[in-house]
Length: 168
Image (cartoon, rainbow, N blue to C red):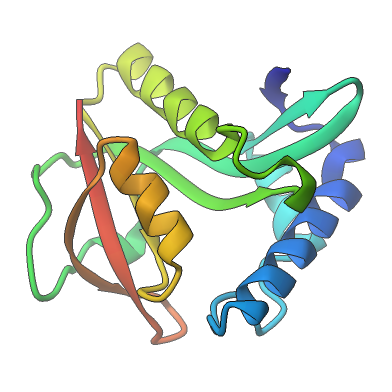
């Protein structure tokens, strides 16, 4: 397996992974991503910004995510809790999607570990992520990887999300 920066040619596969994740979430009764986001336009923007990363095996992209060090505007306010740190800059992971046939192989965890590496390289001491409160598989993955529940953030759309932070 190889983790690498995504390139423009990966966008269709990333969009397909998002669609597969959307179907999986729908089957679990989770309304996350059911409005068509993320999609190919989102993937293209992530590639262009340098935030898109993929994991491939034998030339096939099995997982993708936006992984970067910076600031997430929707993390400025947190409700029913507090962030673990007051860091002005932190690692961020968004839009993790794994091929259904490759689940349970630790690919989401590998993307989270990559975020940790980027944070250490940048001298940043925490990383943050959010998900839908009913997305139990992602919540378990976050907790397994050392993230702690911090509270609730609100997306630009107005949708609430549970927020997690990992202190390095």
